[in-house]
Amino acid sequence: MAQDILCHHPVRVRSITRPRIESEPFSTSLAVTMWGGDGLDVLRKIFVVERCPNLVFLHVQPIPINTPMAQPGWIGFTFSGMDHQGEFRRAALELGIPDDEISRFSQHLRLAIGLSGGGDGSPVGHIGGLPRLPVGMKWPSTGGIPLPLLLSVDCGALPRVEGFDLPADGTLLFFVHQEMDFGTPRADPGQYARVVYVPDGTETVVAEPPNSACAGGRIDVCAELRADLPLWLEEGDEDEDWNEFWEDLEWDDMSPFQQQLARYIERELPHLDELRSLAHGLWSSGAYLVIGGYADDEATVGSITAKTLAEEECLSFLDEDMLRLASEWIPLANESRIYGECYTKFMIRHDDLAATRWDKTLTVTISDAP
Image 1 (cartoon, rainbow, N blue to C red):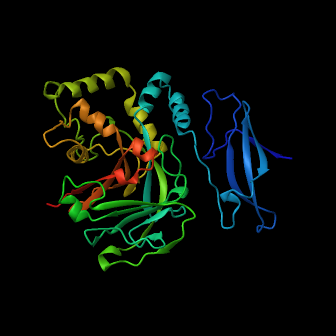
Image 2 (image 1 turned 180 degrees about the vertical axis):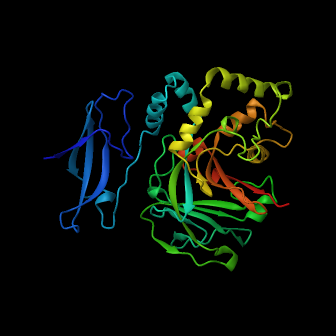
Image 3 (image 1 turned 90 degrees about the horizontal axis):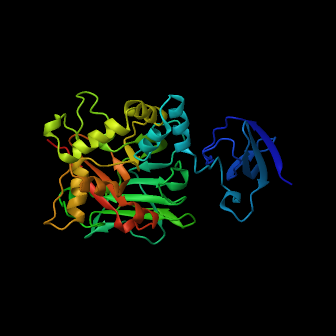
């Protein structure tokens, strides 16, 4: 028989998708690891959650022994599907912002996963270092030239984000030869970069580097959520109050599409500053490398255009078609700008991500070298 545990509202867990109406009952299953009274026995349970207006009931049931959570070595909490939009909506309503405006803003808000070294949490992967490749798999290369490892990340250890179809488990490995990728603007997918997915349960070994250039220093990284908005909704540069999309243009100097967006913001998002501050306050991160979110700057969008459209086709960065094209892609891994060095963005269409077509990933390598 299930054991009932009574918890007083509010309860913060990363796995519950709440209904729009707080008093509605709902249920979900949460896999957790609990320790017995002596601190040694591990009791694996499933929590079935029901909500009443002011209380949350957790019905505890054993996990079936044939699930991954019941196997030796499974440690810690694994929650998924947290209602981030509900959290944001409730906080915005408390500020007195109308519900319909919150909905319009939320259509543009994406949560991304920031990866940083030296954090307090458990590592979810590493930048550089050596990958664990399936037994028998050779180090990814192109034309006999090995591709250095940029990032290895454990998908099962990442926080879950609604609408972002990362695998629930397994490891994603990102390889790229940045100098060659930067020097070939129309490089085909996988020409100088590779995304390798290693499913859980695959027998792997730590790969031996083909040369010293492939064995960069390893930095373990932790994950945290961060709020991301399209460039046209973001604030300007902190130092210069300058935004790449708007360029501090006067009204008569804007393109017709810029004017259309400006009218939309003025009419439909009068509380933009408050909503933007709230989102960044709830989910702030200064991470060096980001999974998800947006990568809609001119250099990135221009590179995607060059690699996906015919040579004679051309789109302006300020056109509606260009903005629509940018929204179709999401960064699988997005390095922050490094002045004087190359940095890379791994971009994938939403439908290719959902279908795990890793070979469709495009890389955009940019250099800010003087």
